[in-house]
Image 1 (spheres, one colour):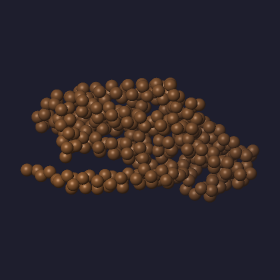
Image 2 (image 1 turned 135 degrees about the vertical axis):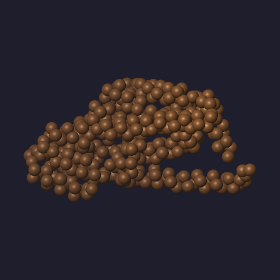
Image 3 (image 1 turned 30 degrees about the vertical axis):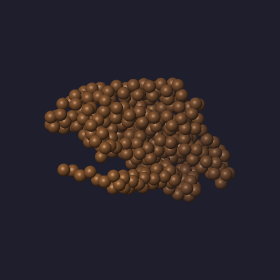
Length: 339
């Protein structure tokens, strides 16, 4: 017969466990935030070859390791690199001075960083530096704060939908219908608020809706799938991976290259980081540069749905009727809390 540990011992175990979780979360959140800075930010430079070489040496000496400079043929190629999301900015050199083309829609913090670098460059060399924003933020959200703040509720509601479906809806087919219905409605509703009402994202409204649908499906399907195969513990695993780790490394308000590596790159393989990148691509760049992020989100969505199916097969093998799943899930949660 299984013995229940004394209340005092259980209390100590819980305290130690939560403290261990705190020890993991503090550096996860505070570390990247405290070490934000440019790391190999892609930048294009166009102009005469000798000028490009001298300019590249100059900016690399100003901030070693901050920029990854690529020389391009002309101003049109430089602008194409920015608008295709191959570079965050482009310096165009001419006999009369330097023109800096940025894209605030890609990352406001990075655009501001380049603008500050241009000012420093002009003061240090005496050159005239002109700044132009090729993909400006919307007039209703000129600093990009609304985009970052509005992104978080999409994550929370996607998780809430997955958990509610798991506990309240019995049956595999009904749950899958619920996941797809929520994703579709979340896309339409999210675009209506963020694009049409608040105006914090630009671009085509239906493209924005499609990205939000894919993002919410990736999150809700993953959480629901983990719950299906592992019960309430699966919800905890999903919350830690997607919400805590994903939020800390997602660079929603910055850029992956601003985080310590390889964590910035790792964050782009999680739904929050990929979702923010894809939404920016849809809202300000006509989808350019969003292909890898779309594949990441689609992969998470398919993985989640596969886990839902796997969990259903497992329950069939145990002989548990589908209509009893929700009641069994609630029973397991109660048992977990009581333990």
